[in-house]
Image 1 (cartoon, helix red, strand yellow):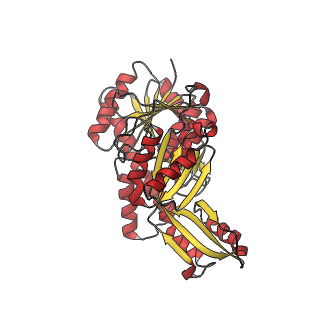
Image 2 (cartoon, helix red, strand yellow; image 1 turned 45 degrees about the horizontal axis):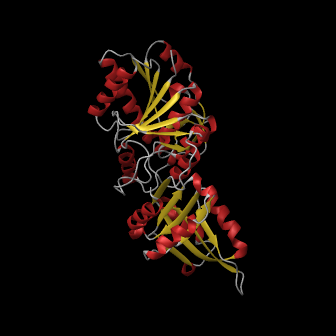
Length: 398
């Protein structure tokens, strides 16, 4: 019967009933060569954002449990509409949500992790010749409450299903593959034929919008090859795969990601208090990044800088103010995190110096910096993002 194919369609792909009907037609055609197809869908268009706005009209701090209940309805609508569309064309189909599949999750509301999925109903439906449509982005906690997986969680749902079904995974979105950098921000960006898990994981975690980082981690762990392509198109996309299936020659830099979703906080704090501060921030599930610290000079105080997501700024300021005087706190909301990623960096010296040279020549100040074996991330003023991307692309011929 061949491999089970798990396809995922994002919000833009199912934004209208016309698009859903088009997907249904292509699924029927695909079924002729791949009889067993599972489809994971996101909420239609900007539905998720609309639901958040609705909740914010009620209160600035919606209850997280109730927000998950509200947010999960979008995927149910998409799934039922696609199943209806397939049936109307004479193709047997069935939709399932988190309750019906017992998608078990753990963690906190809005940021849950998938623990297990009961795929017995899916396998039975596939054996009956049906196309199975599954709601992405959602699960159940240990007391049966609905949970959501966070932004881009439908990618994770699709990869998890591919793992459980021992299938192949295809992610369809509004871009025709993975590019060196976001083509909407840099029109000359080149498309990649393939990218290694580790590289894609770095790009996804750094703000690349094509895929969710957790889905890449899951695919890497279970060696699920991913295909990313444009919805309802025959344009060739990009494969995400392990090193053993890649071409032998590495580029020094494979991709560049930018993110405007963070703020930088700089504080003057007693060295003895820093551990307690970081623990307090962690206890609120606030992610910290780009942490830098100066050594104390003639006092016990140190200067510490770090970045956090903008959405957590209010809570973070509240925590920081318990440890630091207000006049010792500097908030910088005008930052873009510019990250270069490539396995080739492991074997190539002088990459960082080239990047700093480019930025210096263009009068771009580096506010913060972090590095790993395959990544360099600089925080720069947002107004310089375009020129930085353009000059780096020229220098590294990507």
